Length: 101
Image 1 (cartoon, rainbow, N blue to C red):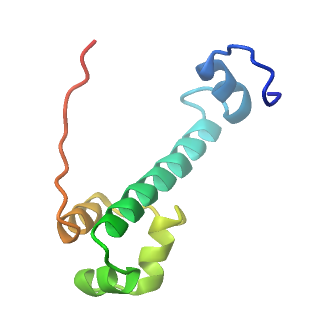
Image 2: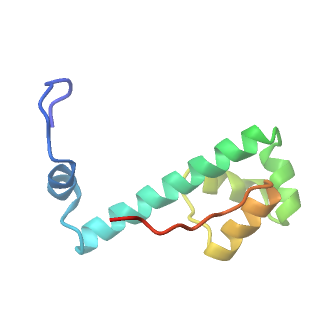
């Protein structure tokens, strides 16, 4: 895709072309990396909002600072259980809602 060519594109088609169609191993790998990155960014933003360091968060969770860094950088995707522990340590609530439509 050219940058700044001002053409309207079908995002799903662009993703399929670049990373494989949904259901393919290539697309699953891309999705996992995207989820890990997004999760890390949510945690990083929440930690900064709480004004605590990676070291402090790590201490609250009983892990090494390097593990928190890996999560925030999308290198490691925490398990669901550990994600909930992080949310609790950051005074956040996870809310699950059903999409309409």
